[in-house]
Image 1 (spheres, one colour):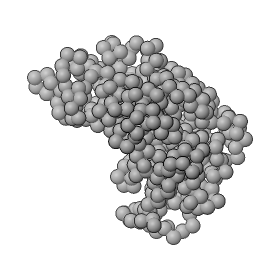
Image 2 (image 1 turned 90 degrees about the vertical axis):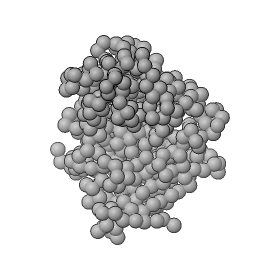
Image 3 (image 1 turned 60 degrees about the vertical axis):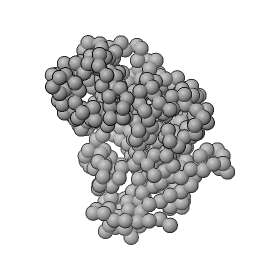
Image 4 (image 1 turned 90 degrees about the horizontal axis):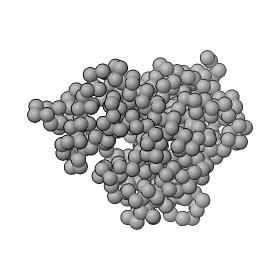
Length: 421
């Protein structure tokens, strides 16, 4: 029986549904998925259209109303009944992490073959029919949620009345190597923007990296912080808030005596630890493996960019790259190293059907961020050229997190959906 609660501005109802782990084997093992229905309290009894929200990630739970930044939600509730889906393996859905995955690496890797966008879409379809029967619903996909939305259009377009995508139009043809070969120059450009804004941070970051090479500094979890792991705090350089918060972190890096401060080490741990979202590390490359294996593409391609060496001049942070050493240094990932190697070697089926996309009748509206560090703009526009009738808004006004930061992003997409320019 669904349970409900209210808090200021939101009426929420919890929904759980058991679904097959492997949708190709509906009689096999099941997992549980969770979605939170959210509606404006004054409209809880109205017959509103449903909007499915697919969170960025992979491996991130859906936003919690009022607890996580989601500027778009208040705007959406004026027109929709929203379903916030905890994608399989995250949040209140059956979790997938070092504590719950099979102890045998091969069994764990086999289990994780069912956690990409194609399985998430099929979960959503079962949940849609469970909640509203044959009625289609709208989908709003942010970042990885956009990749899921394009997969939805490829697999089950009949379930959708419209699709909104923000910062998540994927390449339909790129290999993982192509993806990262395009990513590293974007990460370098983000570094240039950051150090142009905060030039004094170049010296601070360089000092920290050199200090970590010579000194044993421990994160709150007890593991040693290395220079290469410190580089990964740059994952937020494509985010409008985290971009500036990195400067505040570096401001308090050192204490008297030349040691790194507890404040700094706690802050770094909050960025670099995958304890809360291990799936992000485990299947990140799988999510851009469209009919191929990744074979640790980010690490292999990184060898072509020696400017990202920890002691290179000038110092550069890394971005959205999952590298094998993380499974040696992050306590949440260390038990999963062999599993991760097997996942990286797996030959994945295709996620997108370009022929089917070319004939879709579902209205699609997409925000493409001009300087997006995470998703390549040119790849996004190439994908848009395949989808008939898609309306794109290419903007430099917002960063990759624009949807969460400003309700005007969704407002603009809704206007485009109506035909306004």
